[in-house]
Image 1 (tube, rainbow, N blue to C red):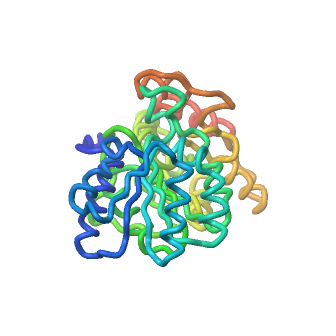
Image 2: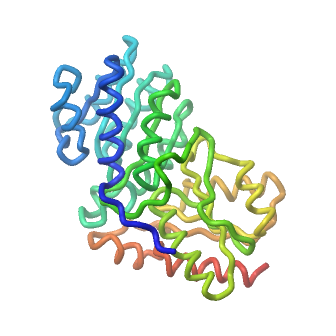
Length: 316
């Protein structure tokens, strides 16, 4: 059963929810680094100009300003492209936000190669490694409109820093609007018994499509959406592996120091000797091009996931 197309990208869905919440909560403010029309934070600025601050193309300064506002007791949402918020501003995120455990929520667009057409300079393919490594940081990666809206509420209600990873373009809708999400939780949009495809963000959509390809061959693939990467649902993975006995980690990110490394380390610590493989960037930059073609070239599309899962099943 094919997934319905999304009408808006996750970066727009979360901003729509932010504007709704702002009508009820006058306490939080929003900062952007001169790309409000791309992040859609301009919607908040138009509605609440006295609570919106465009600090120019200066992500380090923007993050430092966010820390200052948060130190005074406010919740601050910082909007921008992930590659800049997690690299140009990394020291400020680490030392001025995470160390004092301030309520700065980073709404990060252009995750992985969902920004394919914008080229390598705008593709955040190392951000999960940086953000999940920082103490006190919570990391969320929604895959569709419903989970993006939920991620806003989770971020607002979770004490301390939160990083939310968002996508450039509209893709597919996976969850019903009433679906509930929690920090440290997961969902299983497809149940299976032969192999687990653990994934997050746009890879959930590719994994679901891969599960449909595999089903036509008689292979039952389970899709585990680890939308909360830090903390993540260890019990959910354990239950899934009890059913399937094989694990494919799929992420739109470098393979090194991301979801796959986290799951592999967990398997070793917990004596889970299962066939294991990763899909993601193999220590390489991507390139500029159409999103689907870029996924295909770097082995992250549904067909590539199906091939990897098929090989894992053969090793059981």
